[in-house]
Image (cartoon, rainbow, N blue to C red; front, top):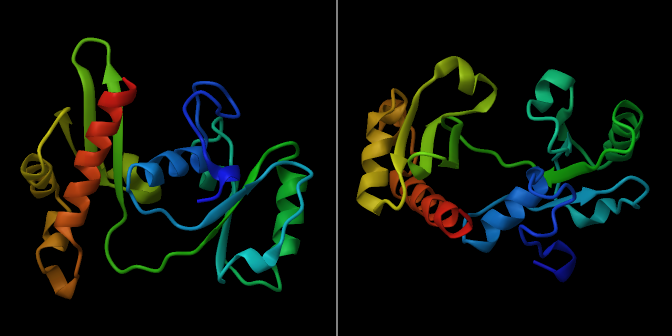
Length: 193
């Protein structure tokens, strides 16, 4: 990661409210893998040679939580079309940063991992079925932090989507990698909480 992308919780574009790009930089600093991406602030020049294609183009604002509801995500953008998509985003979302990141291909369910600091109980972490249907599924497990790698594994087994991690229809999801991400997220929320 170059110095342009170094970030701390003290220098978000909106203090105390990270956008997707800032969140991914923080995650990469604690060892959680994220796709290569660059956030472009309004007026910044885009160099299409910085990416492997296809890419995903997204509006990147801490105030737009559900980008798909705003038509703020375009997937599968090839190099010959990326500048056209960026111009469309600049018109649709003026004065708003845009995130371009390499598109990751995977087979399996989308998942969500999150954390919060509850005023009564303290730091907590969650895992569940993710993607655009996350709120619809309501398939989540919560634990207070800190938690062990083994406890993170128990969280995964509580989910309705858990069979995907244990050979369902030939899926090769990795419960150990997800357990590491959950426990790293729990550690992170303790350290910033």
